[in-house]
Length: 249
Ligand code: BTN
Image (cartoon, rainbow, N blue to C red; front, side):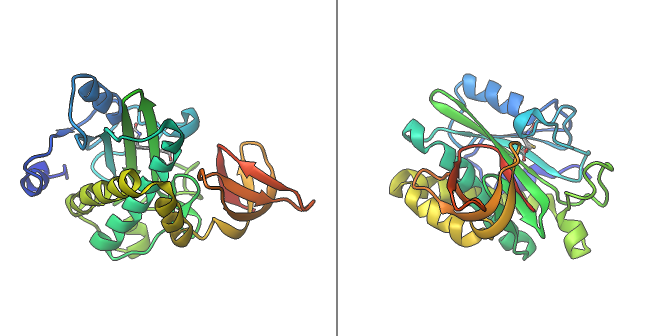
């Protein structure tokens, strides 16, 4: 069933929420809105995407009416060096919103995956454009199956809990959670977000992982003050991971 956007708009009367039945990618829609001057917090969402984008030029599986697909225009007064932490702040917001709306505790996998038992429930794609950021969030809500290639690595709230979840409730919890985490980041700096992330994520310390795409192996050993992941390799050397992702070994 399409998302009942009027119910969400009623909760946030001052926020611009564009919602389409189908789009190519909400990243493109939000970018256009931002270039037209849309304010901080503007949402571009859709019930389906025909060219959903993931990180590293991957596609984001966007089956109609099952997942939550949205991009938010963020106008944050942040130094460029602090921008990578925005993705982590958004991950915290997604975890918080799902805990509130679906009563489910999820894990964070550095830097941008929301997971349950190592399977991905949600992903975040942030694109910085000069004075604004487009933050794309995809949440697997009511999918009961995925394409073969995703089957071993993806899951959804419905698959985890055995029941359907109202996408409206998750979106309604998500928007203020994004506001709160971004507000914390701009007011108090990245340390607070990094501490919260380290507390919320089982991946930040003591996890044996493989780094993608370069294949380095080792045990995670905390975050740097910039938000990069430290990896203690079997040789004893510590490697700072600036980009990419991790998976359990
Ligand atoms: C990732 O984990 O690779 C990031 C996935 C981001 C997917 C979302 S869905 C809404 C928005 N529109 C897109 O095309 N991508 C993001």
